[in-house]
Image 1 (tube, rainbow, N blue to C red):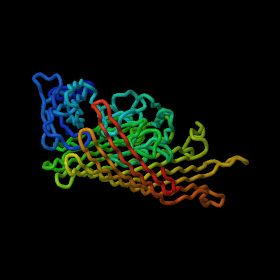
Image 2: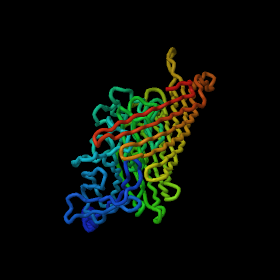
Image 3: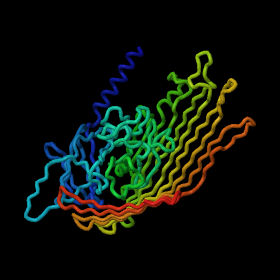
Length: 499
């Protein structure tokens, strides 16, 4: 009887799925690659469509193509005076509209010449000063590599010159450099390592905090950094958060290796197309633990949760605002005191609890004085916290010392980044900018004495300032040759060093 009911339910689900519409909409925004200003009248064509299906961008650079069959699709973007771009093999799903934002690069031509541009991979970097040793990626790119687990760092380990330091963590080695020297940047602000169970002095962790479902087109540098990236010698992840659907509310849920996840996005104002997008995730093993499922690891079950969000507030008079944030909590407890002595302890003779917290919240503003000159400013606050507590649970034999240790480390940072860009012509562009970070640290290490009190053998607190100033000049001599010149100055008040 139960088998018949199950078959009937599966049949109903199959029929309902089949009867749902197998079409979806494609939306996006087209901007000038150098200035970031919206382009009006760009032709957007669905490749190999018969009859031809397409659209053009409006005054805000937005386009929409409706009633497109789901599956893998390719789009061509063309505009007079700009290089043609083709996006290949984009996955259009039935339950979610596809957003494709593209930046078009202006053609540089000489008089009395005929320039023929062939179809090419359209991946254009967000940073227009990037020349070599840089890869652009988006959400779909993070899902194309086996073993990446929707993690951008593990995805990057598939690139040339990049390798995993350890399969248990997502630390990456770039051209033989230390994984700890990797720079993470989010919406123009340098952030702590966005990973669960992270530690100070590292750049990775077992599970990433940043949800790839919230990422927009981003850049990954392995060397030859433009002048606006300082304080790093290994590589750079320059990450951007995507805008939510400003036309229609959408919701999602999924279960995977990284956790149970729910997300929502939609418009805040149909008039201005202000939007929000947020995703929350809780560890898969943590959920199973709550249901009493034993994985054979004793009490040591990694429990973590994270939230990533972005709120976009466009305005034609005062520029556009973006409120963004991410946060993660992680906890794991190796409890020897709860182990069965007859079976033997998995965790020797001590209880060990590791906690990590990380949070970032910021506000970004961009204003165009005219189509070629704009200023972008980001302010943000971040905190990184780790705690390790070791508690011995057995009486040790004479001559064997096992201390009870407690470590607490906190770093609070307040950041400002502002930059002014001027596209003088199709060939020349100048960018100047400054970044200021105020950091307050509190590092404490304690040991339990025989009298039962905690003795701090390490106690470090203090404030420091990191100031960075840079300038960039770009000269496109031809469509195939570009000269980029830059200067970067860094000053750290902690040791009065300058570079």
